[in-house]
Length: 114
Image 1: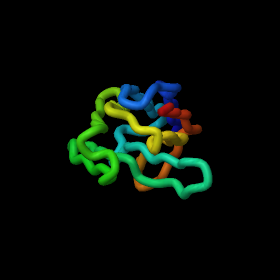
Image 2: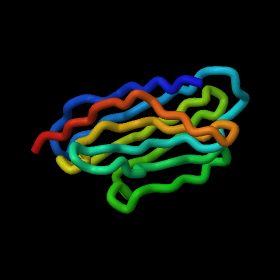
Image 3: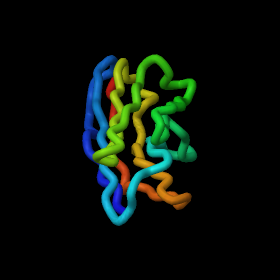
């Protein structure tokens, strides 16, 4: 299984970015996919996840600003990030639970300037 992320970059505070993650490999469907992030000097933390059935979960710090969505037919998830803040600056990692195994993407950098 491979997770390929795209959409990171540099944006000013208050701006928006959209991250995408596509899972490929020999599997039928994912159980859960989502995003974690790790800022410099900090531990990796949950951002948002979505299950195959569309149930979502968000970190309190991003509720109301970020929206996760998924396309189960394409095994792809998206993270729409609005009203970005400098504290959102981090490496964002795609995550997938497929057949009870955990998979991670390589990470994509998101930098929010003040």
